[in-house]
Amino acid sequence: MKHIAIMGGGKIGSMIADFLAGCGDYSVEVFDRSSEQLDKLETSAPIKKTVLDITDAAALKAALSGKFAVLSAAPYHLTVFIAEAAKAASAHYLDLTEDVASTRKVKQLAQDSKTAFIPQCGLAPGFITIVAYDLAKKFDKLQDVRMRVGALPKFPSNALNYNLTWSTDGVINEYCEPCEAIVNGDLRETSPLEELEEFALDGVTYEAFNTSGGLGTLCETLAGKVRNLNYRTIRYPGHAAIMKALLNDLGLRHRRDVFKDILENALPTTLQDVVIVFVTVSGWKDGMLVQHTYANKVYAAPIGGRMRSAIQITTASGICTVLDMLAQGDLPTHGFIRQEDIPLDRFLANRFGRYYAETESHNAAA
Image (cartoon, rainbow, N blue to C red; front, side, top):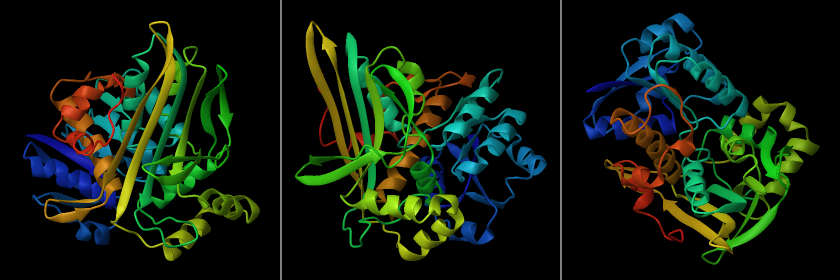
């Protein structure tokens, strides 16, 4: 049995703990600075809960001693602390961050590491990166890669058409930080909340706009090989305009603590959500210009006797699948590992990856 440390006992951390402890192959210990948060954790199998200040480097290293891997479900600004401690403790490292700067530092830590460093193992970046690269490999020559993901309430009932289903810090960060894209062959930074578009899926209209971090390392991987590559977050129409007014016109991008407090006291959470994954890739194959599309919707569902949100299921199954593949010898055991290094078919065949496979509504063209 492999010993696993999970940093962060929030909505996603609790789902990760439930998946791993429930399968019987992992001994799980969850760390959080809040004893109240740990007391709220409910899992279908026994886990250990430990109060820990993650910013205490010595205590963090001691906590990771003897662990096979550490999985970070903590806020993005703690990513580097945890990655540094993982390296010092010789534990494999996996995280869910969308933060570009943190991932660059994780990559530096991995350069001479004897253990694996696998950041961005969630939904986006994460699963969508695996899907996009799998589609891209089917072409002789790429043209455009468009990646769209959204975690949305099934029953929107406020002006933002949104409920809190994910980390509030993470949402604000991806709405404020610069975005990466390849535009007409050139790698560029683009502005968040811009390049608004609308599309329909299964008769429902959505909007999508630039947000930071969703591409993972794909810009670097596909540089010089694709004309256009971009990532946009999916929301219901009208969301982006209100967010731009709050963040730009009212200046809340410079007062993130205030904005976080507003959102968490105005927008209720919900377990009645849907995650949408929509990837379109075009290019040349056998002398013809063709397009392949992957579209999938994942809904909230009962797992282990408890109702779990779609964002909990998709995010936790992503990082648990990558951990499982690492433990089973299906991935390299040292250095930096990109999401696009993970084969889609083996991901979906995994006992945790099946939560994506079981809900697929549209299959990509062969």
